Image 1 (cartoon, helix red, strand yellow):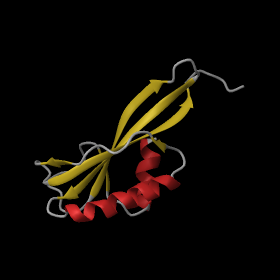
Image 2 (cartoon, one colour):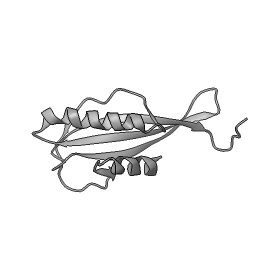
Image 3 (cartoon, helix red, strand yellow):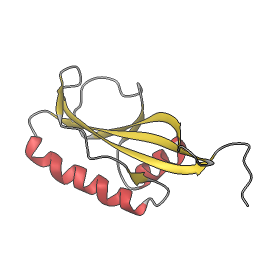
Image 4 (spheres, rainbow, N blue to C red):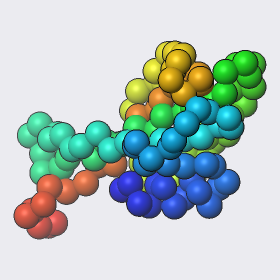
Length: 118
């Protein structure tokens, strides 16, 4: 799911990185996509494939962060392969990146490997 989401968000004009890829401080908004693994859906042949989108926004521009996250949420509604599963995490300050940071968690429900449909 990482590659599809990465490509989709890049095509929508977001600056996107994989975890650990961005270097230095945050001088402009960017996203980091982090795969959070899979979890069984009890009593079914399905699993949740979970991904987290971390949002970094430059310090000193907090009042503008809301419009950036609104744009992300709007575009993610059109990416029908996943659904948001929890509310965004509270915004924190990342001192190393000199950024405000929040995150959104999405999941894709899929068939367990080795199972046949029907």
